[in-house]
Image (cartoon, rainbow, N blue to C red; front, side, top):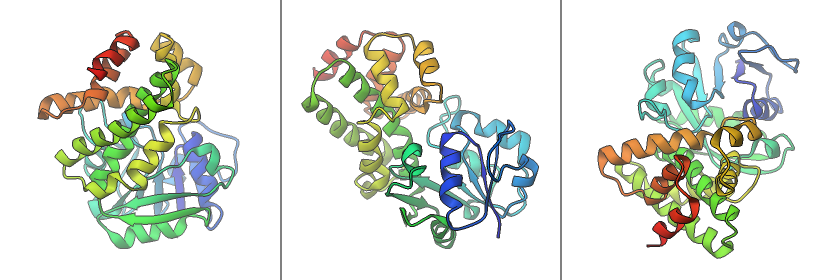
Length: 294
């Protein structure tokens, strides 16, 4: 049994570190890296179990150009919705991989804390319970794992929480206080659940690790890239400058657009996501706050 992580950014590297505690685990990326267990992409793709840590917006192109299904079992660890198509990651991956060979990771898990072996709890989501259990067993003791079959619920939570995190960062950047931020996050959870319910997600998922757990983490810490995007927007910085300062992909920027496309298409009420989109497009954050309160 062989395991490989595809994608050597912070999250991929953190998962390689974590999985290496109990098993032999390789890692590969599009650029050669000087790191332990690094192999070529071709070598990595020969593994039985693949951990795909590639950003959501480029994953479809990567699969088309690099991937051939040969029975591999895949754990998808990215979070987000494809902006161009409005498709969830499970919809993208099932074009290339049978559903029974797919699982999706969710839950509160900053890469920097995983690299320090600090404790957390995560969820492996799959329609194949045996596969979810297998992936769960790969994780070290400091990452407690649960399993679930609510794939779409986990996907909505993982995507939407980044949008609420941007809103929360804006709230903090405007120095509106803890009451306002708590109110925003709690209403954000309601908005996430409303959106997810339309697509068939289970309500319980939004109250667990995938929903409330990941949302509370991402929307309340400067370790969160999306929260830092919100801080920058509150100070009326240009998006290009904000992303250059962060130096990493902030999926919430793209996911906001995807969520708004879907909410307009399906007539879903998403007021916080709507205001985040308007701020990204140049609306004054103070005016957005006034409009939300009204």
